[in-house]
Amino acid sequence: MSALVFMTLGVLFLLYTGNRDADAARARVTGAWDRVVPLIRQGYLPPVLPSGKGVAIQVLDNRGHAVAATENLTGKPPIATFHAASESVHVERVLCPPAGLTGCMTVTSYKVYQPDGPWLLYVAVPKGPWYGSTTGLVLAIAVPLLLTAMTTAGAFYLVNRDMNAVDAIRTKLAEINASALDRRVPVAGDDQKELKLLAETVNCTLNRLEDAYKQLRQFTSDASHDLRSPLTAMRAQLEEALLHPPDADWPKMTTAVLAGVDRLQAIVTDLLTLARLDAHAPLALRPTDLGRLVGAELDRRTYRTTIVRSLQPDVIINSDRLRITRLLVNLVDNAERHANSQITVSVRADGETAVLEVLDDGAGIDPEHREIVFDRFTRLTASRDRDAGGTGLGLAIAREVAEAHHGTLTIQDSERGARFVLRLGLSRATDQAVRAPD
Image (cartoon, rainbow, N blue to C red; front, side, top):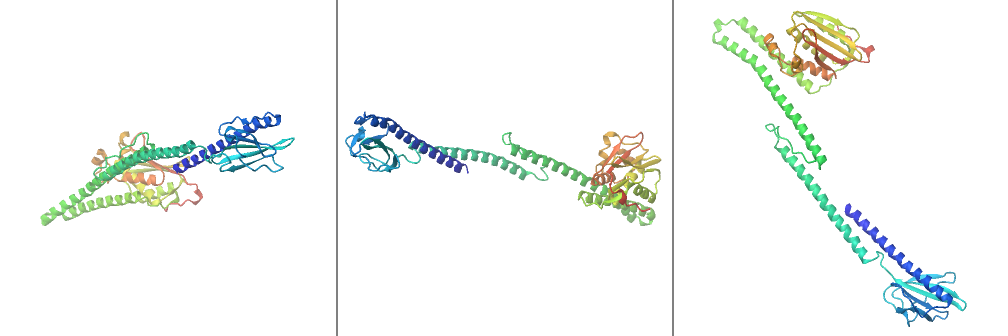
């Protein structure tokens, strides 16, 4: 493309120089007319006329005899026989060559009217090529070639530099696997902004991938541990009973094994729930009265602690009722495990937001642990000492359910105990609210 542009510019340059030389030749012809015609009309015409650069001049009288000429035409016959028509003063033709001269020349014939009849003035100038001078032609060819070569060399350098950077990124990416996620691609310099941005983006992606892999590995380790613990206990109890069948307390052993099965079932159920949330399964959103939904769920269950309700009616949200119910159950179960005697559950509208709060009167959660408790399989030391039956997934599921509804679930300050606060956007379709069944 650049070569075509340079060639076009070269041709335009040649056209310009050719036109400039043609204009210069016409100027020489006009200058000869201006010098000679006054001499003819005043009768002071010398036989040898001064010649300009590259100009041949010849004057013929009314009989066609040469009466004056430049030195290169002195004593020679007329250089041409044509003359302007009666209605015109001058005419121009190209002769190759004119009589007495060499080479192709542009000959202009002028009529000069005298009392004894019209005289003829011939002015000949060399006929130049369309491109002007040879020097211009050489420049028009050499300069585009040089510019094309320089552009090609520059483009080759830039492409080769960028390809080397891309190849370095590709090579480093090819080396990254599950056992080498800490490696990063080289970042180009500031003179390669696009490649630098690409490398930085790739490294940021690798950082997120490494973090996600660490979380997955930790999640797998925690899940394996939590699944293995009840399995190990159940196996030990069964093996002991089989070794001494007459001495085994089979009802007690069966009850213990069933408790282990219940724990395994709870862990598996929570893992499946998390898997569905991670897969971003679509929500069955329907307008729902949050206060009635919470009240109906609390009525279905029995708790060892007192439940204090403060449920504002007509707080309408668009929600997947099964998942919001699961969120509520997880929060209340968590509060029951840590409460001393009372749990407060409240629902209210706050501007354009529906707020669900679950507050217990237990020991509470330290500020530095308020985000950690939402990580999967996270149970604080105090929780493990107080309740060894939790799966460590309940709060993680609750937060993901909240985020799936474009809401938030956080732990806020309270005078006593832990205060979990869920915030969801209110639905505008309040007249279509779907009431929770009693």
